Image (cartoon, rainbow, N blue to C red; front, side, top):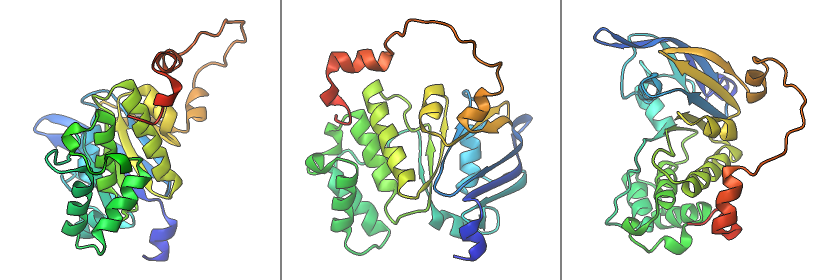
Length: 260
């Protein structure tokens, strides 16, 4: 990797546009993602989030603009980009007939990596799936299946991972499990670009948040910077009420945190 690649942003997007017929999906999108950070692309359904991910992962071509991932141009260096990334879509792409370990071994072999068994065992441990490794994926809960999906996407140690609405359809407990896994990814140096329509997900995970609305980035900053866009908060006495998360875990038990 060149010095420029190592020092520049993991992802650089400038003036990205994309239309499908007369429908303008992206209308001049700009943002940068720092290496080793979590960047959330927040927006409602139809805002253009998945289209942006598809362009950055070389699955679609932009009409105009530039995009660079890990120092490689997505239009002219697509092979290098694909070798630098992993993409996890909205639905877990695991083979439910295979065990969790067999899913991981299969992907490692497809990537022609040495010691696929050790790679699988290490990832099962990393994602707290060792005890379930010998079970068929069809027996996994939603959170376990999604964690396995993310583990599969990390085989080969890609420096950049795209997570397209990673917690869609998951229950509250499974969502928190995935959040913990994503935080650990960034903590170990992986750059994470995730799309989400859940406000609390972006708030909980992201170092920076960009709001995509009708094909444009309307604001981009840290959570603190975004909060400063509103008038200063008034100091008032308010009796603190338990959050929904407090209620949920009070009912199911704290031991349920991080487990399935």
